[in-house]
Length: 317
Image (tube, rainbow, N blue to C red; front, side):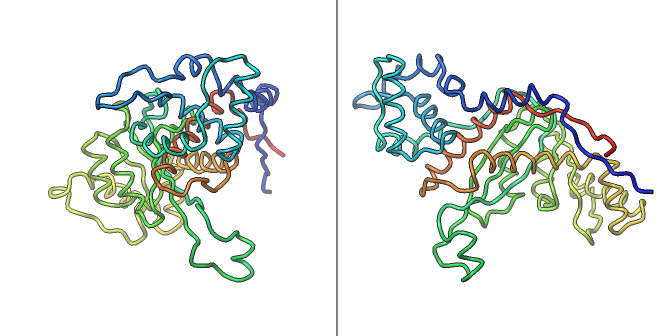
């Protein structure tokens, strides 16, 4: 007899309040944002000082992402908001927001102050512009259909995004994650990833950083010489363990359960929450502005996570 289980949320009232709070303007436009609205630092080069600080532009981009506003409507929303709140502060025009967003991505790295010990790597595609799914289904894809790839490093305990990167759709996951490892907190001791991260250079980077990998080796993977490549020892051990558990799909399945590999699914859950909150498209066309848009969305998702997350358990149906 096969028992059926169902996942039930145990803190529904608390989580429901958190979902309602996501729409509160006070969550996104805080007193701290108001105090840092104007630029305080003098320019290092000759020229006039910027009117708006980087924090102000980032705050504006977060408002745009949360409320799904085009740039012109965003300017109108800010003007109404400042008038309603009685703030004697200038409002950036939609052209200023667009222009400043192009250079903002260079100054953004870490998305949270958390110091996690475990990290989950994952990636997904987002559409920039082109035909919709219905047109492609009926008539096939066109030439102007353009995609980008989002790479996230997620803390499996707090569910917050620690690092985010945006690349062209052709970028290899292991190659991008290799660069992301350099910006991880020093306390990180374990990294999870799917088979796309089963690459020698990525193992080497993790080894140099003192991070243990939990990555399934590809089918038909071979044992390598650890004398020449000491960073490949964890992969060799994984291959031997899978063979010892019976090999094939059954041995691989048991290995994933015993090593806790399924923690990696929290990265996919984070991707799902990202697309549910902000859709699977980007408004900006230029990749530098798209990176700023990604960081704003990641920061907004982290704030949503802090407001409250569902807590549940599996029960018999």
